Length: 284
Ligand code: G3H
Ligand code: 13P
Ligand code: ZN
Figure 1 (cartoon, rainbow, N blue to C red):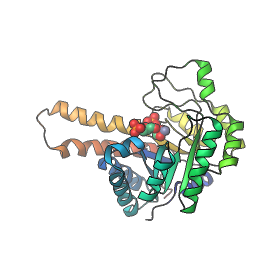
Figure 2 (cartoon, helix red, strand yellow):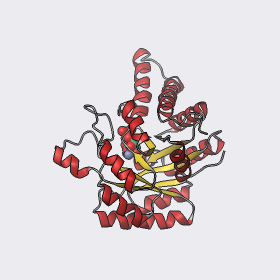
Figure 3 (cartoon, rainbow, N blue to C red):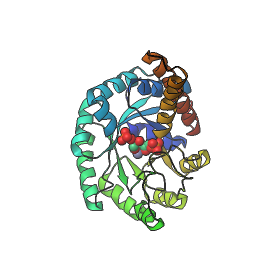
Figure 4 (spheres, helix red, strand yellow):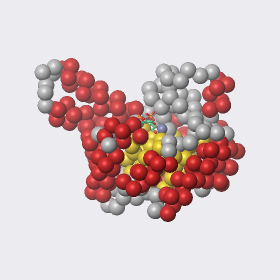
């Protein structure tokens, strides 16, 4: 099955009222787990790599593994750069064969975010690569912030409208109360804000920091217009906790395959659960 863009997957997701899972990979086993899970569920899928993952494994390795997986897959698959923070990083990933990039200018002032995003969109358009941008600050669960600070971080619907009109991005990541990493308490999603954004912004919306968000909140977010859901932490938990369990049970084990194989299986299971939750099963 051919490698596809995220834009193409999200267009169908919007029409079908489901969301496509975007799963972060850091190594071969996780790339394999993502594709195995998607094939088992007959679901379209997005394999994504962060700058941290690229730094860890090397761009050629990440791109090589993801391309092999996507091109051999029996389901449509996209390869996406997650939270690219520079023009250079996006161009390198496009050149390495990614079908989609995220340019995350959310830490910049509005005008600079628009300018940087436009620069990436111009290059990506020329070679048929789709672009996700971010407006508002998603942040991490470790951020200790007040209610006012939280409010200031969330995406402003009118700004989102202007941002999308001026950049013509394919999809927009919004801050509506989710955070990256493990939540300390229950995340409070601002669904009114999401509804307002979706009324004003006519492109697919992306939910980041989705690990640990209760299932009913994920379903509600998808019903209100989220068409791409990013998951990393839940995969890390399943993968690494399985490794830890095996190593605790068998402290003398030295065969990496005996540790990484079950970790890969645990990742497949968690990814399959997410695919079912997002309503993507059978949509390939
Ligand atoms: O959005 C963040 C992702 O979970 C990637 O995290 O930068 O540690 O690879 P990372
Ligand atoms: P989680 O690690 O909270 O699932 O967030 C993933 C993400 O948003 C990647 O961009
Ligand atoms: Zn993210």
